[in-house]
Length: 221
Image 1 (cartoon, rainbow, N blue to C red):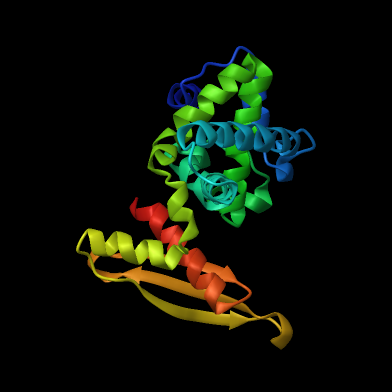
Image 2: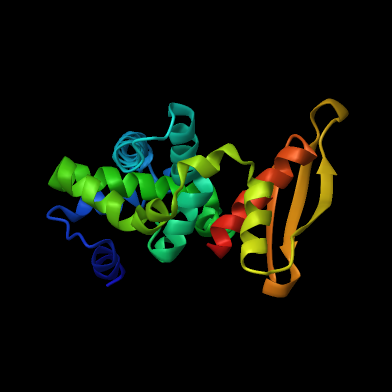
């Protein structure tokens, strides 16, 4: 039933359902898992997004296109899509991963999205895989503006909130861990009026704040 629902959500019905099962299987659940499909799906996803951006934004420079593509195919974006698809309900995980909440982990969710793209390619060919990318990423691609990628994420978030007459975000360091030469900063970005909080971890406070702002943009857009 879950796989039927997922196929309906994807807009694609598999002729060989084993491809979809493999795409949903994490390495913790056995040797026949989604790692190889993830590798292939990553390449298909990157190519399709690059081609769409290339044709839609003929005046954008290479660097702008690269940054726009990076935003669209990054782990957080794919995990956001996975949650919209409710992939956590369909993932096949080992007992250890299940116990630790792996079904909600960004890395596992994003890998599954890439693996599903490859599974569609294996089952139905390149055009079907490219069509799937357009369906699941279409809204985010439509909102993508390569020129905006020249601005850092904190600036983009601030300008977006100002345009909507919303409160500006606040940033707070929640914790600092690791050795002195390799500290990791956990930063929270908060917009009180929207009651939304996002977090990010990086090797510097500045990078963590930028990533938390990027996560906030994904959340509110």
